[in-house]
Amino acid sequence: MIEFRIDRRSGVAAYQQLVSQTKHALRLGLLQPGDQLPTVKEVVATTSINPNTVLKAYRELELAGLVEGRRGVGTFVSAALTQPDADQLREELAGWMKRAREDGLDREYVEALVKAQLDLHYEGE
Amino acid sequence: MTTIALDATALTLRYRRGWGLRDCTFQLPAGRISALIGPNGAGKSTLMRLATGLMRPTSGEIRVLGQVPGKHGANRQLAFLGQDKPLYKGFTVEEMLRAGAKLNPGWDDQYAHRLVREADVPFDAKVGTLSGGQRTRVALAVAMGRRPELLMLDEPLADLDPVARQEVMQAVLAEVAETGMTVLLSSHVIADLDGVCDHLLLLSGGQVQLQGDVEDLLTQHRVLVGSRELVLPDGVVEARTTGRQATVLARTSNAPGWDNNEPSLEELALAYLRSAKKVTA
Image 1 (cartoon, chains in turn brown, cyan):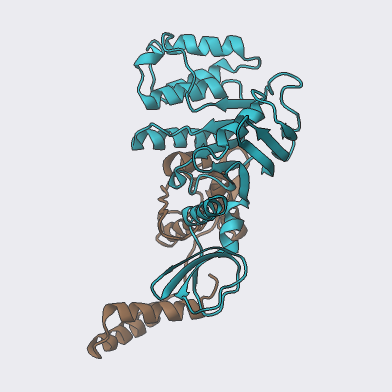
Image 2: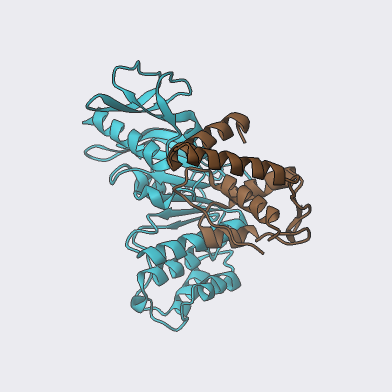
């Protein structure tokens, strides 16, 4: 079982935070097929968010085929979330970062560059 | 079950001097948590009193779960918890629940007791000796003991410390998750309602300034920052300038040249409240 944390100042919609925290836990293997997600009541009782927000997040996870709602029982993980092997990409990125550092780019500038590329290539995600 | 919990048409209450509510038309959807936001004297409590039937409108109409209040006695599906949290100080918690059982047809005694137990309030304690948070939890148990379809809370968090505020809110939300009841919650502390409410009714000077689904409203509005020389977009709610810079809140999706962001609930509400104040001033 995982516990959600809502950051109200992040500017990210609460349901989106629930979705991404669940996916994050799936990626890290903290959640595995068959595991139960906290009930709506449990989530609102720990995070003080609207129950409809939790329902919306769980619906989205269900549509993505990651979880399955069982009426009167709860919501269960139905699929693992694994990413394709990224070793080579990681190495390339490390090399790029090293060059950026050597060329004297400061951290904030690099962050801005990365974010701009993320926004460009992952538009709307 | 109706899909509209509260339905007001040109609802007006006139006091001897001034208006309590003036020509308010709005609908609150069932199964949702609606925020009633406005400054002191905006008409928030008046609106709730009209819904309970404790007061009658001068003109216009309000329907509570499809019925006009007062015509068939107080609506049994409606529970109202006023700002003063009416409890008998000399009663014990147990006696308070017994009074609730006597006064309310359709009372669910087991449920009311469970709510008090979950709040860790001793049944034999005198109401007058309880902390603010505990008193609110007992008042909530009495209000929810008859399992209402619609729960109206007038400033339920005022005069509570931060921990109690959170506990009370979480208790209400947990029951909403379980029962699906509709809630109308008033507060002038907007931060308390952020993330909690999914529908908004903004009152100022007895009039509706803004209403709708919170998420829709947030995506329909933009906070724009830019040079004051820029052309203002359509739908400006409030524009402020400091030096060469302008900060604008507008109901628009198209504002070329401006740095544009989605507002927070607080930014949205405050912009409407400030601009309403300017108009009436």
